[in-house]
Length: 410
Image 1 (cartoon, rainbow, N blue to C red):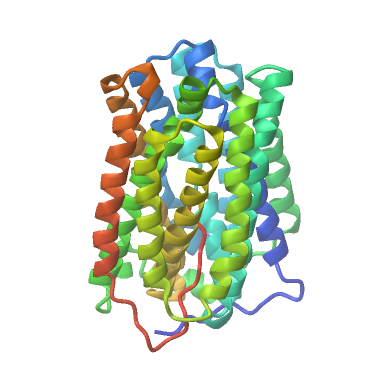
Image 2 (image 1 turned 90 degrees about the horizontal axis):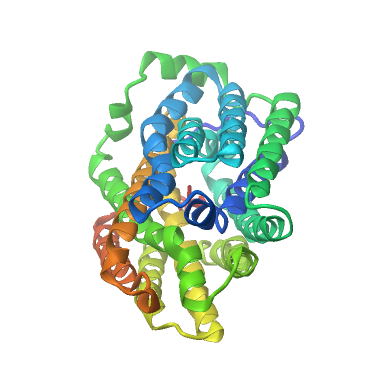
């Protein structure tokens, strides 16, 4: 199955796509340590409301990401990117102005409904690179993800500490507006007219599963769902876990998440790219899921900063291995004109996981006291990640072609 990449423009768009994803992840990272504490402390949201505030974003992405992927296959990548990034900016503004739980939920709905930019940007990269070269380029994008996630939480923590808890949301909105402007002015359209025409002729999502690919793609999607669900339980609860277990504020939580992001840069931008010179993507996904499950199971036994940093090292290593390799396996398994739809499906599987994770995590916190906050939730996270290992073992990648691309998680 060949992937006919679009002819590379005279000036490669990879640098701008890298910057687009970096700014996107920077804005996303800025709100991670702030949103749960903002919702619980300022808006006085309950655990059930917190679950919806965190999860509704991903529920909307579940519905909208495949649509954005399909539209980007039919009308081009650039207009879809601009519209989705502008929607992100509006969502952040609503969050910053929120005074009630319903305003927070509305802001998350707007942001989630417009969140098709990550899978579309990845499809841009698939458009302008061959399968042989895509692994290297996607590894650089993984570094952009890690860099944005590293700096974002630290910036969000500092802004909320020295200004107000709403300030990071307005700052993230400004970044999104800048991002949309850069895409509109500088990004060339990467999808060829031929590919757009073919997508219009055969526009069903079911085409992704044709040609004997159904079993492998289904296993990859199930692996993605379980892995992201387990991981999202931790990300939803981590800020409140640090506050209740260690007494940390938003700035301190931001520094810890910056440490996790720095490790992600090193793992995805360096180690993973070197390891993927050999066809061991499935093995790396299994190793990542195992390390991630063990790290989640260890979180309830963490009582000092040193031990917490060791556990976070395992979390970063595991997530850096499992999610990028699954996305890479998926990308390799379909044709060029289906890239947007397949990556949209992968983002939808991830979105469903990020919706289920907070629902499960916040739904279980009442089982534990303040001293053991989220203990049961983290154990359940480890169990769900064990299920991900089972599904990954069912994946049967083709060994005859090029090594699978390491595409960062969405």
